[in-house]
Image (cartoon, rainbow, N blue to C red; front, side, top):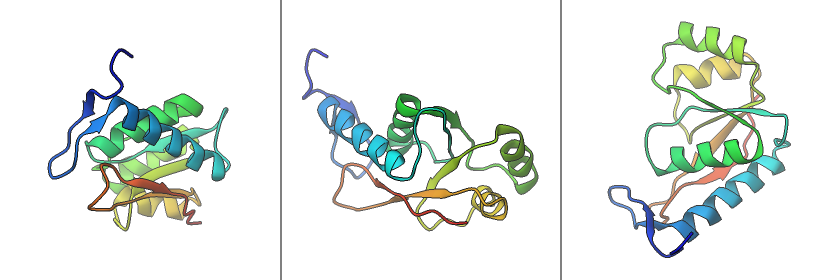
Length: 132
């Protein structure tokens, strides 16, 4: 990386995230996955809307485990079929959002890892809160 201070990600209403900041957030997210017992050999589904959080979660999951990007707008039947066939170990979802993806994951006993948002932060932080 030539300039770690260069802007890596921009999101509306948030401060820019530099490459240095992106690497820091990916590292924090990898550590949060590890704290939840996830790592090499795990399958982590990421069901987040487009944005900086999705980018960080995808990079972190791909760095430490098998990353499975998922469309957060899927209906319940499609979610059920996909989650059954993917054999995921955890699912990353937005904090407090009650989506069909989350409902199907909860019914299947799949841990949901939430992103806790802060208006001051350039990016949301992963909170390892496992719902079973």
